[in-house]
Image (cartoon, rainbow, N blue to C red; front, side, top):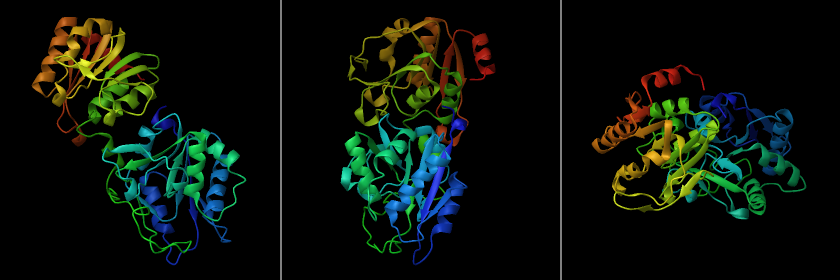
Length: 379
């Protein structure tokens, strides 16, 4: 799905507080990409659960064709560009119940990105949940008989566990809870279940998190996105942000990853160890492929030249190779060798954005004319 195709249905639940935080939350929502949320007010002291459930029902009724449903409490602040970031990273799994950009300190994770927090009745922090349509419809159908004053997180967490669905929280936290000691429900305790310990700040752009030293830079990622088409048979050495680009484009994709810590939680990712010297993935080539991205194994694991004995098995006469990190001599030499062996034309992709971190890439195509045609096409 293209980012422009997303349709968000957003609600903010609000109740009287000793000091109102609603206006700050609405301003932060607008700044991060959600300018006109539905306001659902608890004017009768019904409690957080009835108000939250009412918000979800109203969103589904008003926007049955939404791509995502987002329910926010009235005491949350966000970093910039959260909407764009969510559209490029959710849903982390096909069994997603919800994604929480807010992550309490107790759920911090050493690996950045989305991580599962499937705690059932002990789930905490319903400050801002993005919910996929199928899960939202199930919640409304299956939780309508629940009678409770509060405990949104516990009720939904227990339901998700019983349904075999995943609750995802984000490290670092892309939102912060500002209602501490100012609760609408009278609970003014402060602990690591209610406060983010690593909030990135309101001035931070969430999309900057997309591109790190371990991912494709935005310039090469943009060229890759332009090349991808539905039904292309594609191979990726490594996994991560780039895997999501292949999936979003509808490719018949396979990603080889040796390290569980960096394996994107997506169906195309095949976890397999490195073998040999130079190392490559313990996987029998199943080519040919229409496009091959070489972004692994990492240099500290022996580099990427282990792919060379398999180049012809992986390619046909029109295969395109995309090589990352070619500012490094070893990766530049690898691109040179592949181009020489397969008689391909090399296109240098120079860094153009700060988030590229100075990294270069190369795209290897059968001829200059092929590259010119690809550039002229609209995905």
